Length: 285
Image 1 (cartoon, rainbow, N blue to C red):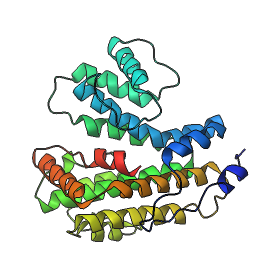
Image 2 (spheres, one colour; image 1 turned 60 degrees about the horizontal axis):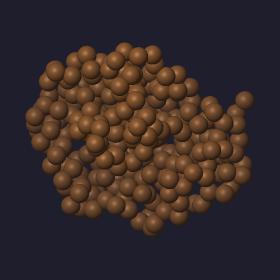
Image 3 (cartoon, rainbow, N blue to C red; image 1 turned 90 degrees about the vertical axis):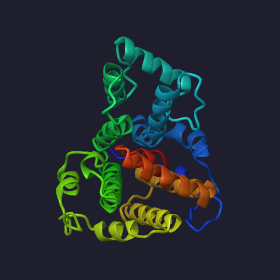
């Protein structure tokens, strides 16, 4: 039976993507809304915070236990270190930790000396696959949409700089395979993705700040268009949280930081890595 959160949704402020300061925060959502969710709905909201856990795991693997984590996901730094230690030692898995995290960590510790594996992409692929099997149609489609958008963006960029698209595109579904192998401007996906042409047009904008804004406008509109009939459900709370994250991100985004991200992306693509998905996983979900 679908759960309804009439009081919670009614008490949330209206959000606008117009440059104004958000009247709420993600942390306030975690403190004031999350505790009242039913268990099955909380698992859906957890998918948002797991993106931060992913970034924190990669940071801890790279820089060690003394790393300063920027944001807390579902797990504290101490909990993540315990999960990592259990995976490394082959200890029993905790039932409250998603399987994809253990799968990734066990694979990492068995192959950490290899230099041909893009760990950010490996974790991102497992995360997206896990999220798209969450059992909630709307949330599953949101992650599928973001994966497709990110794959199109990185493929267009790889074409522009004559780089190997196969190392950049994540997933093995029909859409990912078409993006990876097609030489057509539309990757042979016209009629398959109704947002394809918009993403391609946005990707061709050379002004980074404008492009980022257009992408978030598109995401915002997707959330609105696909949740029209979700009034007081967990889907409405998920939409609110995603919109809130967009507003908060733009509150701290400036041209200098944006250009630095762009330069890093080009450098990494040229060196054979594909951190675009990692960047979007951390900043756009």
